[in-house]
Amino acid sequence: MLIKAYQEKIEEDQEQSKLNDLVDYGYLKKIEEKNKFEISNYFFNKWLSKKHDPGTFIIPSADKYNNKEKKDYKLPYSIKQIRIQKYQCIMNDIHIDKIPVDSQWIVLTGENGVGKTSILQAIAIGLCGYDDRLKLIDDKDCEDCKIGIELNNGGNSNVRLFKCSNLDTKNFKIVGSDNKDLKPANNVVGYSHSRLHFKDNYANYDDENDKYSVRNLLSQEGLLFTNEYIFLKEVIKIIDQNKSDSENKKIFKKKKQLLDDILKGLLPHVDDIRKLENKNIQYKENGHFVRKEHLSAGHKSILGLVGDIYFRLINNQEVVNKTKDLKGIVIIDEIESHIHPKFQARLPFELSQKFPNVQFIVSTHSPLTFLGVPDNSVFIKVKRDEEQGTTIERIDIKPTKYIPGSLLTSTLFDMDELISLHNTNKEDFYPYDYSDSIKRRNELLQLFEKKLSID
Image (tube, rainbow, N blue to C red; front, side, top):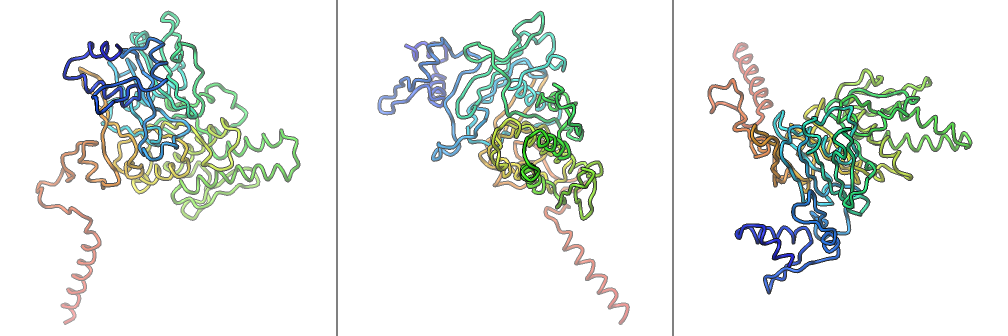
């Protein structure tokens, strides 16, 4: 009866495709020999009993895996699907579904102004809620703005729907599938492209703005917690505990070592971190110890990003013995900002190694970012036009098979050619780096000319 009702809603040539979608979601089971379908599990019966239908804003789904042979592993926290309606430049509706629960990276790319930041912000709001003082949702879109997220939360899936519950007061809230209010998701942090403003004063941590873990992504005003801040915070925590000095030193040393180990692997050209007697911290950058203020913008950006991730995630977990124990979802806009090309590929690779139980959702303009993420990532190309607003296209690509040039001319970036715009002769260029050969040729030519002059 369910199948018949569903089939009546769709065109004849779409029936098989729609039914196969329900199979992919785990609601139906296909009996190959009879070419029939049957309801497959309790989860779908529960969904049906709540009178959901194909028009529901976001429908719970079965877990999808990249590695079907290792279905015993999934990330502790991850997004399974996202649907966004009427948020900023997203005029109509976009839906990213069938995200595998073992995909550590979701990567958005697209030209400037197409809506990558809006998608990241919508995800953050759908998980963590919204402060209307940020003025991110237009008054005309208040009633229609909806953000649906299916979240794998510690192994259990739940649907979260962000919507306006009172148009007069513009009161927004997050509800579950039973329409009951949900609290903001824990272990979620978000960052804008601007990651150079830090908070060093522990005394003001009670500020609610600081505790809103995605504020930097939503307003670019949120300050990031750094190594110095964490140092001061841990000292104050230790003083408050009734432990001996030797025990306090062991506790602090262990937590400090955790952070130092992360930073030393992620900060290129920084190979030592030391604490001075006046409690200031210095970083050995290219052979010289300097304070944070004198670090390069790239190093400061990574310092703020990693320090803040560490601080916020470790404060939401009871026991963390090593960085691999940290769990959560990290959202980063323009992950490559301020970073030299040599490290743009290295950064996502190092983040994966340091935080294997964290899902990263990022945007990028750089093909080098793709060289640092695994093939089982989810790649989304964001586009925009005047008629439809922001739209998305899922790109099936394996970055391990590409070099930066071929990525730039792929469907991800759509560049027609990689030749200088000042080159008027399209056949006269170096497809590879011949600089060493040219240098050697010039040296030999100089030697030859010198030999001639002697003779």
